[in-house]
Length: 181
Length: 283
Image (tube, rainbow over all chains, first blue to last red; front, side, top):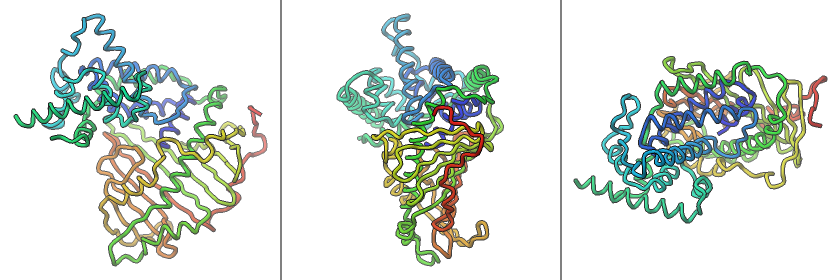
């Protein structure tokens, strides 16, 4: 996107307005991804905040070689993964048993309720192993290529494609099952 | 049974809005971190190094954009005074054009950063004279020039009275950046949209005729309730203007593309505009 390249140019020149605009442009996408990964809105916002703090520090030397949105989504996925690992170290391996993102959110504007189908999807996502959930979200929500996801996760493309396939199969099974009920 | 496509579409509909608390934290951090750096007059070396590859991407993107627009075939129902289907072949005969793209994004007043942002690009392309692109906003412009067959690019920053020449790597010449690889897909998606005829109007004294499409492709930008309009010169039957409007969350985005074709393009615009007193710090 040409606008992103221009905003990056201005950001590297230290123009605040460009960074404000970049944040406003992608904040919801980043918070959505982080929330779907961590199933915890507050933790998700901390991750997005950390990503932007790092991004701010790169002013003057940031080089964009692809899609800025893809870059930021990858940063969020990496930080979310680290956040989850740290939480697991603190609380043990049962981290997946956290409240779903559609409930327990104190602020109504944060709720990710867009109809019954999405509610089903949220529940189905919680049933996926983390790696499969991350792969599926980066692929479907982030529109990233398998090669880029493999690079971000540090695994082979075959592994990524396998995770994606299993994730789709499992989601399909869960959603079909819920639809039948 | 839910198809992969259905699941994919469902996932794309997930949406969690960033809270005002997060907005305050990030906007505050931005203001704090970049305080006092708003008017940098002496750019760091790193920035100059950065401009090269970005400019190359922008050049390639601009060329693709031009191709996309040049290939834009629109079939309208009978009754129009314009032979819409003939526009592509007419454009294929043209060897020079200028088009400017202005994007204006205005946020609702309730948001943390309600100031509108305007950015403008002007693309100049001539088979005989080469390529030039100006990128700017708020009255400041940076220009890139690439002569035909040239393996270098000249960058001019009038605001800082500097210019420099940088090589275009062999493996990047003529290549498009990843996000702009499929102009045919853009055209196809544009033509998939429903349309209606808008009738006649006048733009800058030129009699034009227009059509309107809903949900026009916006090059990766998510715009809700977007509408695209294309206006064509009734005499030359060449595009004069494309307008796109839509909502991006709490923001309103407007894209405006203006065109000039063939003899309207002055060859002098392809000559690097390096005024006396400009310095070339990297050479």
